[in-house]
Amino acid sequence: MTPSWIDAMRGTPVLTVATALGLKTAPARGASGGSVYGCPACGVERRHAGRGDRRGALGIRRDGLGFRCMDCSLSGDSIDLAALVLRGKRYRDLGPTARDEVRDWCGRFAGVELAPSAPAPATPPAQYPPEAEVRCFWERCEPADSNPAVRDYLAGRKVWPTLVTSFDLARVLPADETTPAWAGRWDMDLKRHVSWVESGHRLIVPLFDERGLMRSVLARNIDGTAQIKSFAPGGFARAGLLMADGFGRWLLANGERPEWWPGSTELRVVVSEGEIDFLMAAIQWSDAAECAPATFGIVSGSWSPKVAARIADGSTVVVATDPDKSGERYAVAIAESFAHRNVRVERWESGA
Image (cartoon, rainbow, N blue to C red; front, side, top):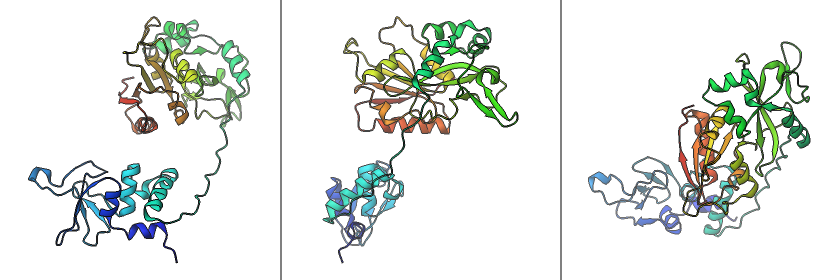
């Protein structure tokens, strides 16, 4: 019976696999199974470096079929070593796509013919409100600085309404506005549909897709009475959509560094979290500043590989998400989307 690629790899000495992966190794001697220099998990080159130990950080079992880092204690077999080098995690910790990459490499290395991977189930495209309805809704909204309640709400959060209006970053839904069916929600207590006007969600921030097209909006509560601060259109997705200032929309639409951008000047992109942090970040620079950064605002599900692909190589992305668990998850996801790109990612903790 032909062995599976897993059996073939687990029966292959770790030192043999390490050499194939381009790692420096030391051969087995006496009771030692040998060692590998440079742990692919923690990066330590040698074990007990402070003691002058010249052996590699990864110690190999006597049977040659397993390893353990003498610094971070990570252990595994030949498959895990391949996964760590190729994808940065042990095999069992990888997602389906990364597992397939490791499986293909191991199969080629072991000379085992692999059965085709099962195709991933197709993900249905996200459904957004009709573009014409969103555009009409946005056009009926009024300038952010035209409403006293909105002015007070924004100013209380150090977001100056006149600049929000000048950059057209957000607008306000008039109190007498008739809204589309999706501009509201079903209230379980009242047992009826409640519009954003009635619930006080009147600050409207547009959402754009990876091509810079307005596809939806977020409605932010301004009177402080709502348990849920923001709503997206009822019955529609907001995944894959994000807030963007004018330059951000330009980058999404064109997917390249502007021709007029000075060659020696760094192109910076700021990614903040939530409507208020986005507005605060987007008004920090004058519209007359030729080299101001592009500013994006994200919520859950906003960032995607399609968005990352629109950021030109050579750019610096400043991640200004909140310093909490969700903000850190967003920061990691953004950084990973540029893992194989010439894009520098910086972490900046927002004080908003």
